[in-house]
Length: 379
Ligand SMILES: [Ca+2]
Ligand SMILES: [Ca+2]
Ligand SMILES: [Ca+2]
Ligand SMILES: [Ca+2]
Image 1: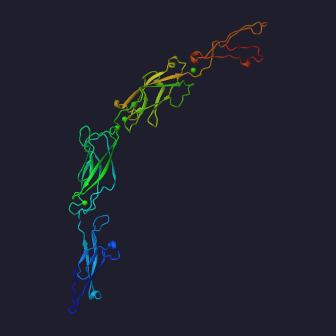
Image 2: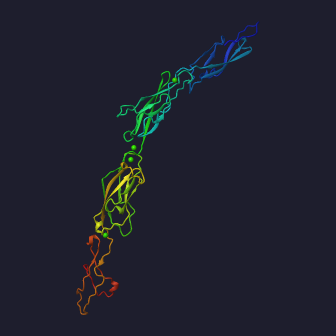
Image 3: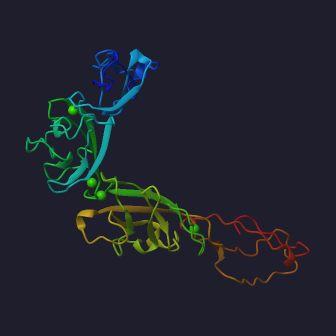
């Protein structure tokens, strides 16, 4: 910068100095520009950075010119310095890992996620901040020997490059994405891709036949607790198991029901009285149960239904009173009969223990207050 002075008959002796942004002599970090005191030439003292996050693209300061060697009158001019960008910033992915997900069994070209890198250079200066995306480390599909994912080079949108990902085979993938600017500077980022489950696998009972043993019921009181818990195997995460006893599938099918537990297992419960004294029931029950993984009674798709047998063995409990064969026996006895003379034998039977139940006998003392009679253990 040069200044002119209108005075003609005086020694000019003009000196220059700066004030403003980047000319702070007392602050070394911001002392970027200096002016030659006598020539007015402004020069850069320190490296200049125009880019985010620490740089500044424009600097404004004032240059002063003072005559009489710094003791006279002052003139000034404003200076603006615009920094021209160079490609000194590589693209950066701000996060270490980017997470995306895609549903299994889908078509090709399903959108998974978008990866975006930043470049602090001037987007208007050539291609310094123009980014092109590509996949540096892809995953190769074994069947087709082709990459599983693709990326749109301009937008960073990641899509599936093959159809029908199988979560049960590979539940997640990791790929490496690279962003390159127009000057060839690179930045890489990692995409972690989770495959979302759909219910595409069938359930299987973990046994072909389940066996349990249970007490017969006492009268009409039915126990609320389960008498058997069955487990199912299914590779999916998203099953809605529904269990039932198959109607008329075997003896006893009407006496039991299946319920689902919170953990996905199934439980068998009693819904009709069970009687060991019934010769049919004494040898137990055997019937079929089913499970489907599509929810409430939705068993139309046979692929999603599994079957198994249940065998229930019955245990006897003492739930029957003994019965006298004859309710009333009349016996004549001479008054002269000797003490200890046998008058009659009573016989009572009990249906428990298949009729082999042990019965013992006693005389109701209120009916024989003077204790004139006795009965022994065999009646
Ligand atoms: Ca750049
Ligand atoms: Ca399933
Ligand atoms: Ca699945
Ligand atoms: Ca019994």
